[in-house]
Length: 75
Image (cartoon, rainbow, N blue to C red):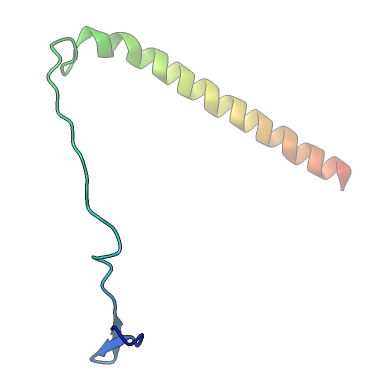
C-alpha cells in the first residue's frame, strides 16, 4: 500500500510485484535450412558435445576428490 503497510486479506499477507520490473522478453525465430530435426549437423556434433560434457564432469570430480584429500591432510 502507498502508506507502507502490508495489505492483509483473510489473515494472509498479499504482495504484487507486477510493477517491479518490465516484461520485455524478446524472442527471435529464424529458419536455417542447415539445422533441422535429425540433421547431419546435429548428428555430427552431438557425440562431441557429450564427450566434452563427460570430460568436464570427470575433471570436476577428480578436482573435488583432490580438494577433499588436501583438506583432510591439513586437518
